[in-house]
Length: 324
Ligand SMILES: [Zn+2]
Ligand SMILES: [Zn+2]
Image (cartoon, rainbow, N blue to C red):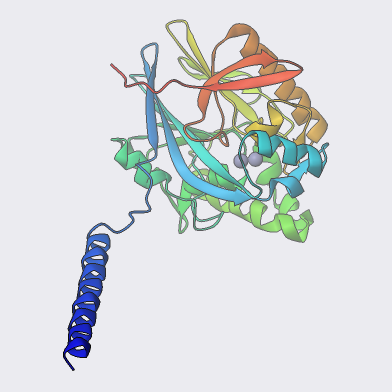
């Protein structure tokens, strides 16, 4: 009897400690749940007298092996392996805000609601960065794909009520033409409709002003034609006090693949041969001159420099810096 009773008592005590211990550790875990959020998506740097803020619209997973052209799945896989990436590749969507001191200029507007639930955070991040949509004076569009113009309008109203919107005439003529929508393949209809709906409130208010080719739009910000990805794709060059930043838009999409091999193209290109030629020119110029570059789909904040590396190029992301 006695030994058995002892065993029972010991078992009960052991079970109690176990249960109590588990309860304590469960309570400790519950006190600090996983946060699962990123830091506010903005990154700021000075460019001469100008303040440049990269604004994140979020990220989207893209099946790059399927989307890339003039390459092979094996070549893409080798490039992802070298970059520790997996397909689908989580791809940033970035916009850039330039405060010249007299004008506040936004370059591209993210996707709004046009490209799924993981994008459309531009306004929240703009506000986190210390600005309000009403303060934007000018919006320069690199091209009218949904992930660049979708943020312009919401429910038929302009998101930036005081802004003038500018884009190359060739993109406007293509995307806003009713004939483009009428002739669009089934898969392309949503993109055309998205572009038209995004621009419509600005067109109606007389606040959409296309330009053609090379133009200085405000002092220190120039449009540079880099047609190919779309008929009017445009790069914007920002310059202050001898410092220069080229905002590339969609001149390239997949850093891991298209820096080592600039000849690789993507299905989104309307003229992939021309797009590749513009990319090669832009890479060579940036590497030779050593100015800053930024692109809409480089990993956020997507700002850095380029240097020649073998037969291709290497991207050197900006060293983390606090403006002063
Ligand atoms: Zn695009
Ligand atoms: Zn894009």
